Length: 301
Length: 313
Image (tube, rainbow over all chains, first blue to last red; front, side, top):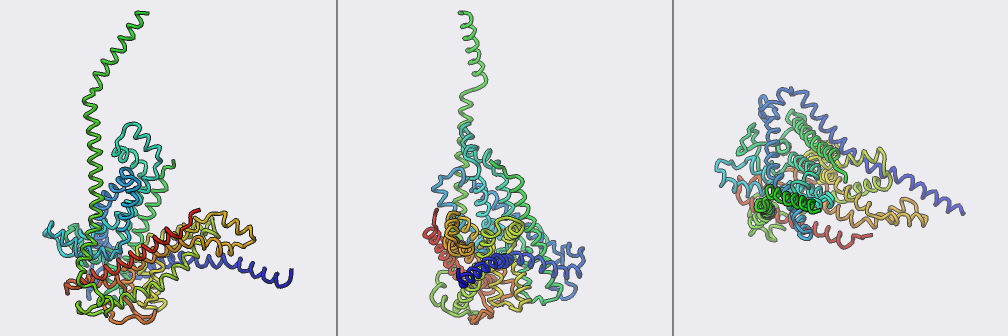
């Protein structure tokens, strides 16, 4: 072998050794992102929690922009988030589950191949479009049914959010139902069951871990959803269960406050990160819960 | 003999009598009919639900398009932003969105594909592989508004990028990174092992194999996933609003350090201001039609790439 060839070989081997390290460096960007999120939230939220006592945080009075004695009770935001998410799930859970049963157990595969992508189109529409739809179309429609409804309310964005997360419930539940082995289905038919009985008494119980996980993931999406509630639910910080009233969610608070003139370094500015931290913990817990359910209750066939 | 036959017959008839007592064919028939009726009712009910969901989708599109009619024309597409609704155009908004994508596309593609290669080709198992995978799946569940806070703190303030296109682009890149990584991983996984082995057999090194064999056959899948991720980034609003993009920017962005506005952000501000000027609703609807058209085109391209170039082994 000539010297030149040896040199070339050595160069190739050098590249071979460098590449994995280089790729690992790039791959660690995602890890750094997570670390960055946690550090940003915790560091800036700690400034907030250092100045505002916990008893105030868990009160119902939220007036961050008041010049004198601003107060930072986050309960109205948590309430707003929970109320809109519950409304969303009241819409998405029955509609999503029923359409999943229909797709998986009643429909022919040919029709399923057409209908399922159309339902999934709903998941591809940007949330800002849903926000416009909620504010401009759904709220006026609901006003005809519920005259006491205000222009900004929790009901309309809740419903629209529910429609937005239907594809999550439908797709994931349908996947779980399709994963139930055909033998079980045929066994039930052999005993003389109707399609409905097979679906509700055999398939749904067998796929329950996937279905519950789908619900939990949908809830997590609803909690983190921002633009629909920002546009259609308003910025009034009401602590109420009355869905005809405007309410503010945690996400909407973050958006309202950053687009306003919150100066850096004020308690109001740091309150953003405190709300962000609570929101982050909420969604992280629901996501981990969904994973736990799928792991623990998954049946292996 | 006779006796036994008799008793058998007796027993048999006895049994029949018993059956007559316990199973009433009429009642059984009625019950079966009831079950079949329930089945039929449920099927109808489920189809009504599907139709309802499709109806809502149709209503959304119909309302948006009908509100935009008369407002969506060439002047609107090519004009400058204005406070006066009849003169407003969204040229600078479209350019803003496009420039944002010029930042997002290469950044996510490079980081996403490199991460996927590392996970699939270099660290098949082990602590690092597990940590990065878990991390990516958790990152996918973080609400977009939180990424906005990250961008505001890190890119906006720490790096001093403010609310420029670069700051917005980096923030959105991190947001859609999990999507790109996961779809690239799927694409790389789908490349059969015999291709790699053939390459090794010819004396190729690992990196050469990845570069010349694995990536070329995975590229259609990677492109499909990246285009879908990009279309998510185009429609994203919350993180950019959190970055603090000013309400009304009349200037067209010239460089990547300029302030900018994008289609979703403009929809957001116009929708908020419908209280002041009713015609802003028409402008918002027209902008939505533009946005949805772009998304539709992007998705079509993704589907075409998948169907045309995806190799099956």
